[in-house]
Length: 187
Image 1 (tube, rainbow, N blue to C red):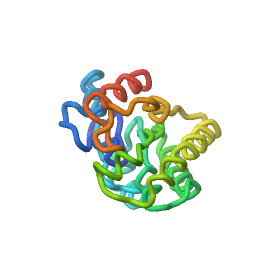
Image 2 (cartoon, rainbow, N blue to C red):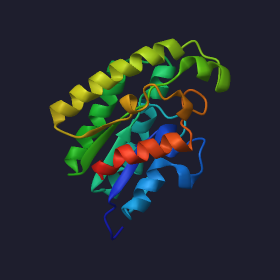
Image 3 (spheres, rainbow, N blue to C red):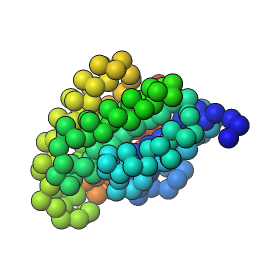
Image 4 (spheres, helix red, strand yellow):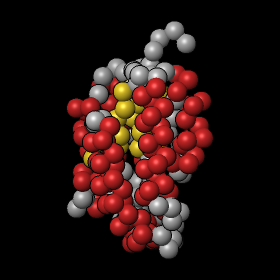
């Protein structure tokens, strides 16, 4: 590879753009706005464990200038702990530091469990996920503070905005527009 990538976006469906067209996804809009050379290596349904298994191949081998990392919602939907999510993200941060890539952490949007239970798929973990996403937000902010790296708080962005959800988990095109506008200052 001759040219260094500006940024790799790494995460789950919330970074991939599940449920909206490519042109409506916040990542696409951002890369178009700044003409960024980028790859979206997000994977629908991925957990931070899955992200770790593909991190070297999908991210580190490209040696990008910046790496955006957002994950954890699917971990919580499977009943995993915030501690395990933070541990996995910490490994990714340390590996990025080793190759001198700048890191931006995304704090996942909240979910609406009642809507997800009806519109997405029934689950006994929605209440757990709703409460633990708030804890994940707090722990990610602490982690970013310890490493002195920026974060984009999509959790607070989505508070009291039920109309931007497709199914209680994934966002509509207008939700992606909000995420895009929130992320502009970080790239």
